[in-house]
Image (tube, rainbow, N blue to C red; front, side, top):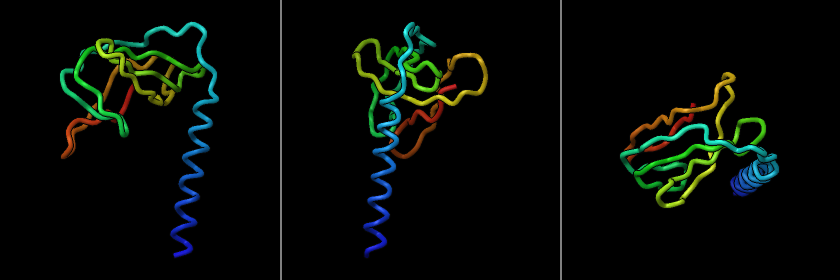
Length: 108
């Protein structure tokens, strides 16, 4: 029982530290859209449900890791992390499908 409680606290602490780290990232002074896409189906990003529609991907950190994915019709947005694989900006949304619907799995 004690080990389960310790594990929960460690996990929550790690999440809190990760959230603090993401919030501390510098924002880009000249945030420009990295890409735009028409998504024809509703999908999930983490715990957020996003409606079908036109989406704009915009860089939010100077290091190119943090992006905002915003539905231009509803204004709803989520933050996504993009791994740095080359010098080009991410411009593709990659989805998978599970029993609950579509899930955004990668931005490249």
